Structure formats: C-alpha cells, structure tokens
Length: 434
Image (cartoon, rainbow, N blue to C red; front, side, top):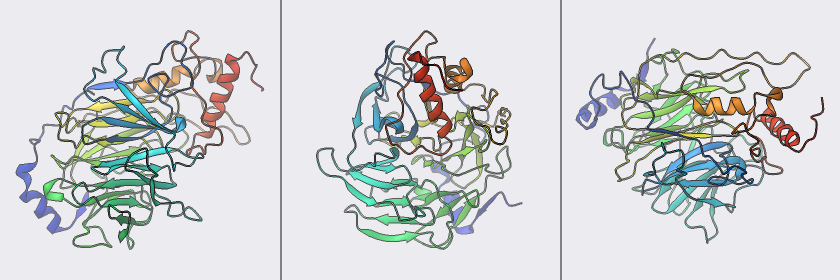
C-alpha cells in the first residue's frame, strides 16, 4: 500500500530545500508536553458572557494575527475572543484575554464564527458552513466573499490567505474558490478531483510555497494542490497510512494548518466519529514531503470542527501550535511549541453504544483520554444527576450560558443543547421532566 502518493516533481522540490527544514531526523520521537492547557475560568458567579467573564462555549476556530496574538471563535457566544500570546497561562489567575469581538456584522444569527484567517487587510471569518466574511475593520461594513448556496452543497468550510498576494482561498466542498484582495473571483482549484472538502491551508514554506492542503472527507485523504502546475488535480495525496490507525478515521469538519518555517502540516483527525458523547481527536503532523512525523501528545475533545492554527507571525512565538478542545461548554486551548510531535502510542477510550431504538438521552461511559483536562472538566460537569447537576467548580457555580436563541446547532450538539437546558432548570429548582 502506498503510504504517501506524490508526484516525483513535488518530492524533488521538497528534498532540494531540505536544509530549510529545521527538525533533525528522530527529533520528534519523544515529543513535548503542551506549553499550556488553558481553560478560561470566570469569577464565582459568571454572567452569560464569553471569557474573561465566562467560559468558552463551542470553540471551533483558531487564528493568529501578524502580531502573534491568538484568537478563538466562540461559536455559541457569537464572538471571537482575543488573547495575549505572552501571558503566563500556567498561572491559574491569568486570563490572558485582551477583549473580544462581539456582534460581528454579517454573521447569521442561526450560526456563528468558526474558521479564521488573517492578512494585512484584516480578518476573514468562516460563518460555520454558511459564508466567508472579510472585516477590514469593525467600523465599516464587511464584505461577504461567499454566501450560502440554495441547497447548501457548496457552503464554505474553510478559509486561508496568501499574505504576499492577498489572494483568499475558500473551501466550497467540491472545489476551492480563489479571490483577490478586492473580493473579485479569480479561479477554481480542484473542481475535477475534490469531493467533500473541509478546511484549507496555504503554504508559505519555500519548498511548498503556494501549495494548498485540503482534507477530503470523501476519500479520507489530504489533497495537495499546486495551482501553478495543475488547477484540477492534486500533485499528491497524504492518505494517513503511516499513522497508528493506518488511515485517517474521519476528516469531516477537519482543520489543517502549515508552518511557514518548517513546512510541517498539521491536521485534526476525529478518531471516534460515531456513538461517542465526547469524541476524541488527534492532531497528526507530517513532514513537507508528506511523510508522517507523529502527533501532538494529547488527544482533544472533537469540536466538530476543532480550531487549529500555527503561529506564522514574525514574533518570538512563531511555530507555536494552537488547538481547541471541547464541543460545547468548558472549552480549552492547547498550545505546543515547535517540533512537538511524538510517536508515542495513545490509548483510545472505548466508543460508547448508542441509546436503544426509540429512546433518547446521554450516552453512558467515560470516553476520556489521558492528559485531556478539558475532557475531564466537561465530563465532571455533566456527571451528577444523570449529567445535569454538577457545576464547573462543583460548588454551585452558575451554569454556562445557553446557545443564542435560534442558533443552528453544529452536528451532534442537539443532545448537549438538551443537557444545558435541563442543567439550567435544575439550578432554578425546577425538576427535570422525565
């Protein structure tokens, strides 16, 4: 079985620039612990607000601006939270928050912000499976590059930017649309080969500069396009056959990012796509030539999608990797330094069984991975009274905010919405209906 399918020209180009790749062979064998795992902690009685006054709820996107600040899309709060990359997140008293962008014009109230991309012209936001919107500043009307299609078949699932040309790349499921900085359409990539794309990453690494990395859930491969040589077909496909599972398990709603200095490719693979209340996902890491290097040390709770970003700024934190954990309340942010991949095995928790036919309710079990504090916090908060009585601190703290009225839940979040509703009713002294 071919583990990495690639054209000879692509391999030669990457190997010719091998001296630019900073990691020595075997450097990733042991791996590294996260620099920090940050779960925003509000005051004892938090209002229904985002951090620093409340918890993250549905962190489904990450981004890093040219100054190295990292941003988190807080889906259910309809805001984007901003953090100082230099704060000491290992200090439990530190929030690191510098503010949040609220009431984003152009975001549909039924959805919310997820994927992000930055360039000198501002911020691009992927309104979850609905649109991509450009904000040059927050005092002027935004520009919608791509809106929803009548049947939803081409609704965007990811966005990235070439900071040099300012061209914008939008994944529209069966092709990638390219726009110039004014928003004018330029071309389409992968229309003959992409089937079900989620996420897109533009490479700034010299040996692969201009390449587009697009996870395709239909084939469970990462398709690598070089628009300069072929706009229709990929020049390579990374099939995940070198990973511990021998393949990618599920790339639906995947996130992907590329380090501009090392060329390393990061992608989130959902390891438990069915019958799991807190599904676990892994961040796989690949060399620029497509070979498997390992994975980030801790599993994360799959966010459908989870946020993933590499700091490609010119600051001292360049190369830092951020990934979110959690798909509803008590979301967390994991941060790793460069070259943090490991080949150490991670034991997956057993998947849960679905409810019997005709019945509903939370699945039972403890689908937690070692080293996943966010998972443990989320599970603990739902453990007592059939998952509704426990609180974040375990001492009567107010429950997390409910999703905005009318918001369309992301896949597999309907159960969590019911849980939060019953959770709030419990704290109001109302007995949950059986």
